[in-house]
Length: 471
Image (tube, rainbow, N blue to C red; front, side, top):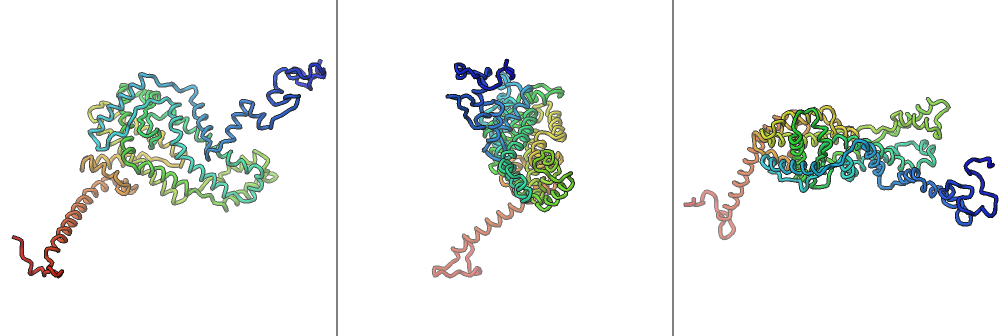
């Protein structure tokens, strides 16, 4: 009997059986790993061999990602896998109900804003569909940030640390992509289980013209509210339709929000001298010094906070601008939906309060931007922004309210939101000044048109005293 069980031993010594398929390898592992090819010769590189095993093939695929600083394949897989046991497909009835709610929402909004509809097609997405369909928007937003973080960290590492990394330096980019992909995947998985519309995080994530509700999450949102399902659905459809109108017809708004995030990314810097001092202290505190081949030592070093970027004044300005813009968007939606719902939606007050509590406790928008750029979207900003929009409509009308979106310089600043009613009052003064300026321009134009009539035929000008009054 063989000393090695199950045939895991050298090939059979019988010449007549040596070349038979499976000889000495009853489970076929020789074929899997490339042993015993034609003529008994082995073959295949280590990458080829690992690629034939499902688990390692998937790992190899992830490690070979070359699509940018974030491994979006891993992010997608991680997000979807976190929902595997909790997601439900949308039904035909749900799709019909969503379409009807969005249609009615647009009719109501037509009466309270001059901005036309921005929704071309109503969509009811499952949680998995939300992840898959919004990945392109997340990629455009997050990739520049992740790329800058990796570049800043790499540039800040002392030469000694880079030399100690040795062969590992070549795969730092791939490992960074995996780490970012895993982090983003977890965040998107959590968001997919909460978001009720396509624009709830403050940005339009669906393809242009797509009005989206997530019926499974809408049902969760409605639990405990003691309101009819169709009323809750219509309230959320009003918010989605209002948001799409704003982003569709204020062409610079989306870019301004992206620019604020990317401005934060451009400002990411890491204090190299602080890292060098920290490395010296960390290495000195480790028993026997720092050993780059010891995973525990590397983990301890990374967890010491040395590589965390420091927030600069420029980044603080970018975050303040982003916070203000998001508050103005959300505040406008609140004001417009309140005007549209009016007495038509009996539960509007309770639903709006539920949405405010959702934000105050850290809703999807705050969670998202806190994860990505450290932004804390304060509810106070949203209330002040809603006050501005509501007062503008009441005092000057909806056209004047929406005119502020015609140029970013017309919008309230963060300082303006500290005293929202002062900002509203100034708009009336500004209108009067504009009217006076227009009258002055008209008067000046009138004087210039009268001058040629007072000129003589020889090109001279008749003195004003000699001018004959018109009959």
